[in-house]
Length: 168
Ligand SMILES: Cc1cc2nc3c(=O)[nH]c(=O)nc-3n(C[C@H](O)[C@H](O)[C@H](O)COP(=O)(O)O)c2cc1C
Image (cartoon, rainbow, N blue to C red; front, side, top):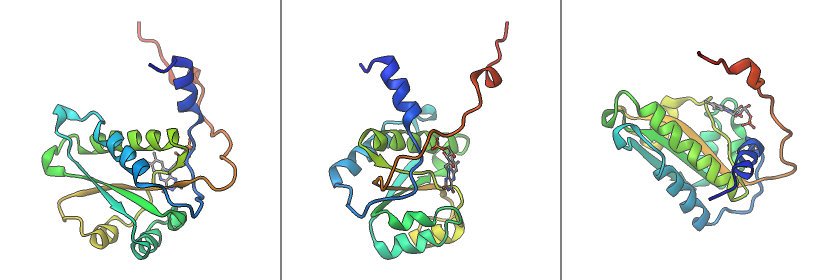
């Protein structure tokens, strides 16, 4: 087991990374990231997800043009698209796939690999490009790569005082 303070610091030190080195992330690391996603919890353990591993540079560039605030994903050599299988859990697929994504992001950080959740995406066009079925949901596309330059500074968080309310 990891010491609690070390684990908390690990969570606090994670940053969204938006600049990547050209150096490729080895398959072993990508597989560990995928496995971290596989082991996320899901409602009734339905696991309503698929993970698309995208290494084709042409597709990566096309996707970067569909991400309004994510053009930087073109610097990455591998993307993972998180797809929610709506029919496999119509009520909880967003939560389930989000948890899988977070697991992947944390696994990546532990491997010194940067990533960033890409939310601003032309989903319809991206789904078409990735041949994702009409009835499936494209949650996000996560770029992965070794961090280029300095790790971004600490990001702002509301204070615990602002967000915690004791219910007696
Ligand atoms: C649902 C969601 C959507 C996001 N979309 C984008 C995005 O499109 N582009 C981007 O650069 N960052 C995006 N982010 C990253 C956030 O900007 C980032 O997590 C936040 O500013 C806090 O920074 P940190 O992750 O470094 O702590 C997104 C994060 C989440 C959770």
